[in-house]
Length: 183
Image (cartoon, rainbow, N blue to C red; front, side, top):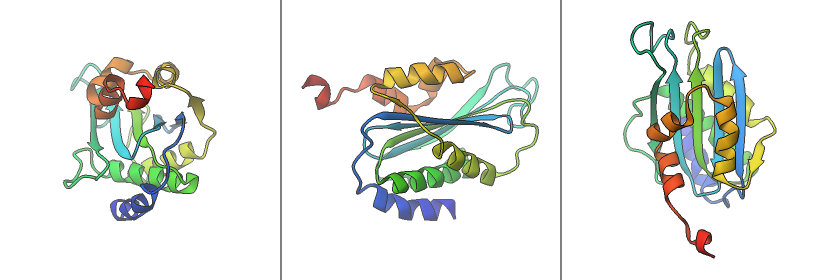
């Protein structure tokens, strides 16, 4: 259902202008940190989770450091089911709703750190509602991606470089120049 609803909303969202600044929303909830970064570029979307040792998807001994996993879609979407599962679509729906309300589109990077105090996953509904709640807070606004990343670095426990290594959006945005950069 999250997939179907978000696809319908994205048809509308893709007709809106892009956000004009980098916007960072975040929320701490039930042993999780959620961060959503809106980047002033046309629609694309990425959801990455970091499961800390001692959590259900990274039990004690499985990995001595957080296990990162995620999925990405370009402007035209994806054809296969994301390996990360239903949280991907739950997050995409919450983001599509917020962009629809804003009458804007963006490249979206959504991050989640899951800490050991999150002892029992309660379902994708919790992710959807947490992302919705995050996107209703007042965003931190930045002129550059570097400024936005400096801010989120202060929130994250996983080193920023680990996120960059796992993120199609971050690697692309950090390495690509646009025509605007030369004007």
